[in-house]
Length: 297
Picture 1: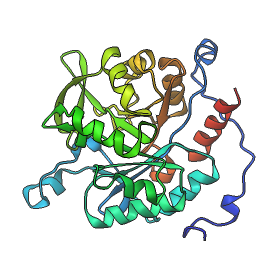
Picture 2: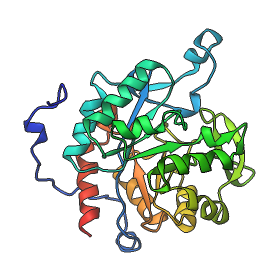
Picture 3: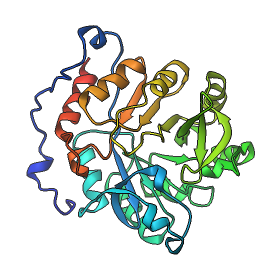
Picture 4: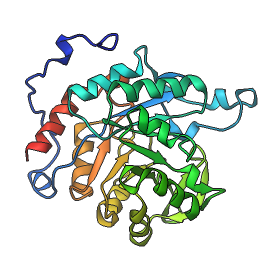
């Protein structure tokens, strides 16, 4: 069954024209390898949304959290519509993120996973108590952050429990970070709490023994369409021994090229608010064409 709003004609593979990143130099074009576009489905209060992640709070709305939340886009389509769109275009390894623990959001997330079994990662409130449920629903991997960072400290025993439960090969660590005092520090609890873990070649190397991939949001620019955090991308490309996906600030095809070059062809990219399917100006079809061009290199 097709998701509402996604016609059979839309599921027919198209002949894409490869768009050029007009400001990317010829030197940049040959200085790094191919990377992948990783799509996203962000869910808040049962709806597919794009929000500025740094405005998320754990406070109840009666204390002002609802007023502080900045929402860029609310979709009128079900989460399964996006899953089927990504499946049509062969965009594996994207992520479904629950931005809240309410039952409506969980059901919306499960709907997205069931629409494309094995195609998407699942994150947001993942613990040892629910990780298997998400995998059984169709997630290829589960993504964890706050569960293994309690009160800002890495809880190695919790990480070991997750690895034992689901296997290293089905676990993604979300190391989303903010810059402070010249270093990038992992932030947890809706990105509001700085942890005691700074990103470095040593820390990424140690964590690589416990997961299959890393996901890193540049929280200082995430959801703002202000351009990428090129310094962070460069560090990930230099340091990460595993596949790593960067999210935050991408708004043009040139930004995607900057990620490819700054990350040495080793850092994948996700785009949210800037895409036209989420109310932005960057054409989703152009990004898919760019991705397909990368894979042919």
